[in-house]
Length: 206
Image (tube, rainbow, N blue to C red; front, side, top):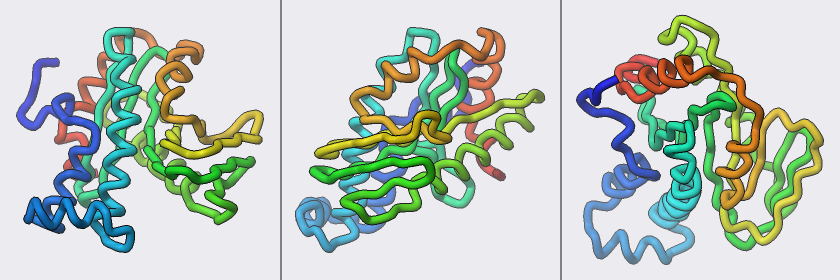
């Protein structure tokens, strides 16, 4: 597929977060200050931006190895998919979560951060199902999508589930983990899904 106006393949990791930060604070000086104030909204978004950049760099290593990677895929609502990986092992939504210096534990159904429960698993599963519905409808064949959570800068990550419904990985392992999975898609299927996924019209009314 040739590039289309607004081609999502041109997005950089964290582009949607960058736009949000600029919207919240147009002043470059105040954005800089906000990045150091832990109780500020700018701090929270900036923390997420760092996480998406780290994960995005690792995922981009898969390019040229039979994989296509998209970043900051925006829904009509304004929310976005952090990263979308399309390759021989299938389609994956990757949600980047930066928990610097914290202890992250994943059992069968939930992730805790410093023993506090999160909704990371539920949110990631819902996102993957939504992406699967949209891509399946636009591609004309069923497109299963598997959710992934990339944990960035945690002091410790423990995964207890033997067959987790959501892949929870340290961000610095995400490219190797996806590349090591068994193939499930043909080259033609990969190319078709990528052509649909990179087109902003796919997500504009979803």
